[in-house]
Length: 254
Image (cartoon, rainbow, N blue to C red):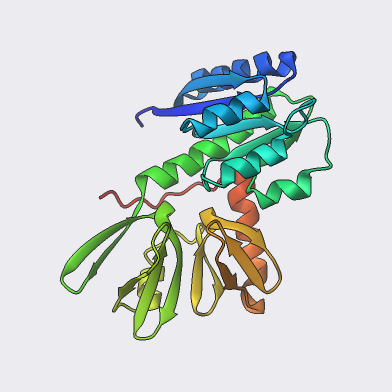
């Protein structure tokens, strides 16, 4: 497989980790051969935020949480999420007080110092699997004389509204309406990523930010219902995606 070019940011005010984390990333890239990485480091959360405001567009963030006399990493992550719902965020810190908050910003992992090569490498493996899925796979459909190719990462959810199926896409106010059976479209999607949360809804785990007993919240703020028969499967799939990155054999190149 051709190497993937990935831009990684490390924001850390401890000089030891500011040096050692990029060294680990570089070693992983060299040994795995999966990604050709470009690494940019920041010792200040404020400097990072200034670069972000100027349009910096990384593929993966490693953020310390505790910065002395500056915006903390959790608030920094919330600023990132205000404009980017997808970039994976790995938190690295001395404290576990922010773990619950980390899930509200869709954290990929939460690592406690001291961190080791294996922990960083696991995060990179997960991110690589998610990158591969997001960039290379499509839902291919034919409806009403037209042929559609929709990238998986663009799909928020599917809704059954007989005799139609609605496909809600990120950044679009109105869903795509297709006169196709809900079940037939569902069969075309990887079951590790697109999970039923209700008999009338299938949700894309890439966009799920918070799960509750009777509802879930998506990256664009929308809510979907969660019914009891689907709760356990949905929770297990969510944990698998964000903790293991999932590995997919299903590929439909356009």
